[in-house]
Amino acid sequence: MNAIVDLPKDHAGLVGKNIPIYKERGQREVFCGLTGIIWLHRKIQDAFFLVVGSRTCAHLVQSAAGVMIFAEPRFATAIIDDRDLAGIADAHEELDRVVKALLARRPDIKMLFLVGSCPSEVIKLDLSRAAQRLNKEFLNHCRILSYSGSGIETTFTQGEDACLASLVNEIPKPTAVGEKKLLVVGCLPDVVEDQFQRLFTELGIGQVSFFPPKNSQQKIEIDGNTQYLLAQPFLAETARLIEERGAKRISAPFPFGVEGTTAWLKAAANEWGITSPHFEQVTQARIERARKSLARYLPMLENKSISFFPDSQLEIPLARFLSQECGMKVLEIGTPYLHKQHLEAELELLPEHSRIVEGQDVEKQLDRCRSDKPDIVVCGLGLANPLEAEGITTKWSIELVFSPVHGYEQAADLAELFARPLNRSMRLAA
Ligand code: SF4
Image 1 (cartoon, rainbow, N blue to C red):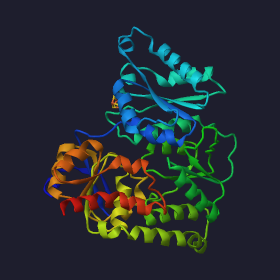
Image 2: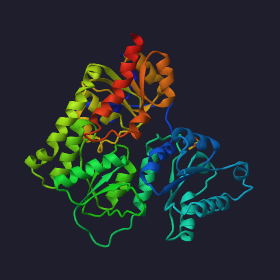
Image 3: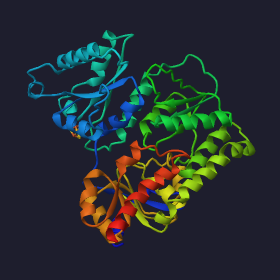
Image 4: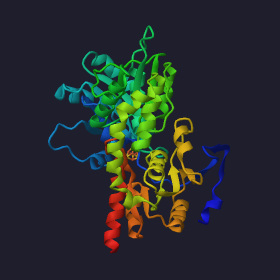
């Protein structure tokens, strides 16, 4: 572990148990925010994502999401061609034409996201203006929103943040403060959402909404009587806009693993004055079942070392889960951005000597990784193959975003995502 001395410390201070945060700037290896369309289009079932971009953007979205053969697709790319770039065609007129043709052919689309890209930003195509203009035309038929998925300086989970932030802006401002309510913020697979809904109901938390909703017609209320729980750690802008409406964030670790899920539910239960015996009555059987399932993977994970390259922004909660519940040794936690308030409860639970690096200088991180020799590395797709070629076992970080991994029932599945590549490497070595 020699290169660590080169890491400049964050002079803003230490976090958690005096854990320093090192900051790095340099070459990055990340996907852009368009990638978020992969899981966003599954979540909001009557929405359509129209990327306004180049053929590269179209390839990214198509290859990342795969082609939906059995259903009408719910994402596409309006390709900016040479005529648009040269200013021969009016890009706004072209876009209007494409949107009208799309909505005429697909009346089932009730919410249309115009998704900006690097090319649309280079030619300064104002998609928010286009959305306003088209909204007037399709009033009462389809809501049209816009957000940017472009990303030289971003990372792929910021696509969800930008999309949800555009949705918050669409929620009508209430005239009066309503009843006390809980809002769970962040895309969750439907099966996980249903599990959490059942848990909140059994706990006695009556009015619960999930954001984004499954359907664009579902009403979401945010006011001074809203308390919200983040389900994902990468929603800085969405959270800021929700708080501007008067909502209050419930500070908690994220619901990964048995302990994380319990702490997340408990934080909400405390706000609703739910007694400990009742909380235990609702959660105990689930906790025991989840611990039993998780135990199957512990022999494969315990005492194995792991390093995270900065990619999904899930790195800190996952490092906490793997060290706290699976007995893994975390060597380095790289994360593209670190929101100290949102991650406060997670940082408290990290092992004392954690090495957290915010930002990326990929060459330096690769040097540290080679020197550390972790048993497994969590990284983006672009780094996985070269690292595997060097004999380092990898896990794609993007898989952790679109697999169901939150909650009690998924705790063992989350552990299995790390146990499987380790098991495969062990068998290959044998
Ligand atoms: Fe398109 Fe920019 Fe993403 Fe490349 S990085 S796919 S150009 S939005």
